[in-house]
Image (tube, rainbow, N blue to C red):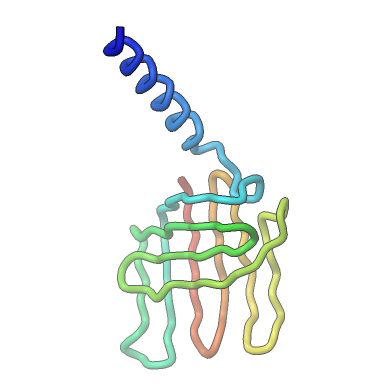
Length: 126
């Protein structure tokens, strides 16, 4: 009897875990989000040796509350502390030392963002 309850419990937990990790999740609808987008990524740093352009890169997006962090592949520095209001999946930024646009949906990620003389770009999907 105990073995049967353990198996049913594991099946129930697995079902919840798989259904909550759907690729149809929209980051704007979740307070906590983790998703990986793949496609072309790029970075231009303040020094010429910092430039990266990769057509088969990836960006892992994490969201906690209204704060987004974009972790790029291929040695591109992380782009963090991006604030988007709940229910918004795009932002247009014109702030002190920052300019750019970020659009994120359940299936695509587009970034063109500049901060402190550095530029990040991404055109990815999942």
